[in-house]
Image (cartoon, rainbow, N blue to C red):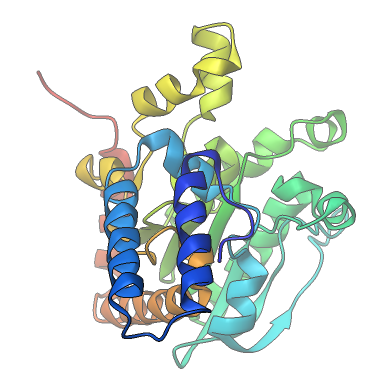
Length: 314
């Protein structure tokens, strides 16, 4: 049962409650119960098979959706977190370390949100500071030195835009990451697991393989931010989400990502164990495939892929 239904899911939640109540009173072979379950499944297929971009954004932000450290706990073995950028401090919004995914020793970097007020303050609501990006780059260079693949988990509304971050040069930190990741001599995989907000996401998103969960989004700006600029009001966020083409299917069609990872019906939070297994397999398979490509060719392909983005003809 979904304890935090979104507005457009309320009728599904109501049906789930009725089916659960019926199941508590009747045997599983009861025709009435079987018919109710069939009706529920049809409603789920109708709803989740026709989600709008704005509805996918809402699912990407669902409060019980798995976050980076949930994936670390379930998909990564022997994880050792490493701290600090060796310049200013440690950014709790960008945990990182070394561990194994599918038997492959990797450097693992991710963006972490909080589940409650206390944790959100600790994690800065998933918006990294400059030291987060500099820590990420420090670990990437370590991965290059020891020939370890880098796996980045993207889930941020955007890099932190506060005064302190500007004073410590947030834009420069992200720009340096873009430049250095483009020429980093090791395999890089990035996975958008929730929100992929602007430069905050791209700062760890230059990769040989960019994957997205089915209900994640990846965009130059949030729908609310776009609506505030174009329509002067956040209420137009649904129209903005449609115009931004921020869903995984749209981005794969444009060649901006390399693959879409399917989620359980209704979102990753509906069955976390399934998405943990699917993601582990996807990352492991990507690492194996990338290891077959000579490093020189891989770097050329990475550079060509990102240089080709935005090029079009009419």
